Image (cartoon, rainbow, N blue to C red):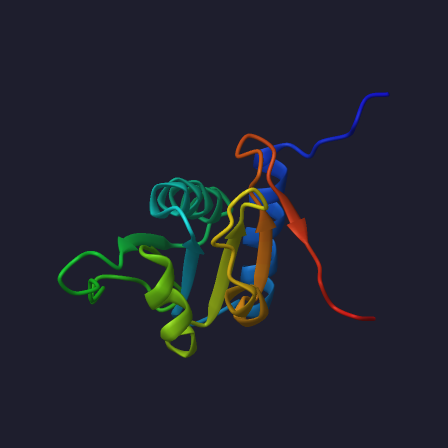
Amino acid sequence: MAHWQPLKTDVLAALADDIAHNYGSGRASVAVAASDPAAGGTFADALEQSIAASGRASFRASLTEPALPVRDDATTDALLVVSGEPVPALAIAGTFNYTVWLDDRNDERRDPAARAAASAIIDNTDPDHPRRVFTDSC
């Protein structure tokens, strides 16, 4: 039996819509964390492009940069999408308005604390078909 898999573009568009819904105006920052920083960077790039395609001003940065960019030239409604090593994303989660945890269930280093601290969890076991996971108890 065939198993339905969401399109990556649809997952990214829905996530971008959720972020825009919660932070519809003003500057906000979004952190994308993953046990694999390269996968996090790839997803963050795609998320920023999806946000930009929706018409919202957006910028991209990495936690590995010496200093996060200050966007004086940014509009007042810009979103900054940041990625990098997984530990800082959890440790400074309060610094970001919205956090995304890329969960690879095949990774034995999966961090339940990072999942609990995230605004959104994305099952990234298949990077071509990520899907959002809701772990609330309602």
